[in-house]
Image (cartoon, rainbow, N blue to C red; front, side, top):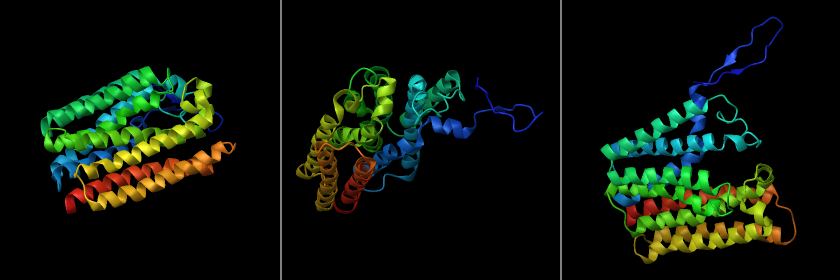
Length: 312
């Protein structure tokens, strides 16, 4: 049952009217802003796998199923974390933490999305893509949200593997299998995730501290965090170049990876120098890395798709 939230009266003698959840509230449960980049890596991986146009129907199926699966993971994340979400300014207004949508209704909605996603991929794509999608869901909900998030600062490193499954879903939907190049796409995102997320964690570490979530900046401070960001940025750039030596991509991807990787390292280095010089983390230094990291991944995958379609 949807929980009604009462609105204050707007005038004397007027009745208090209940506020009911709308479709927009249920959409918010799926974390659409987060899903956009996940779908991007899924669809570009499909073009890489097909070395061309993977087919309109398959693109539609994988897009809808991919959104449903990732959205389901977001729903269960909000259910599990509703207690800490309520205490954090950034997340206090979420439908589950505010009580606008009940835990029962959210769980039914999330379960329906996951079942729909699995069936769509199994029937209209490939069974392997369905299993890869389910694996990403379970990694995010069980491994990250239920287990790692509240117990270790390694949470985002290990739990971040959940965000690495989308390109495997896209690849498997086209080919029905997974080759070494597909796993390199997985690995690139795996090492990119700490760079992206820790840049955000540095800015909101006090919120995590207040709710007892052991993110790296909370447990070990800013200096170790920026050092780890730099290390993972190096790993990411090196891994991004490996497909060139496997001859899976050509010069267009190679040049793109060099330029994009150089900018990622430059922004990571700027943040590192700022913190190591004894300054407090400032948004003007951390935000550019956080935002660019998203652009980096999106453009890198576009470069891989364009290279394999037009050149490779």
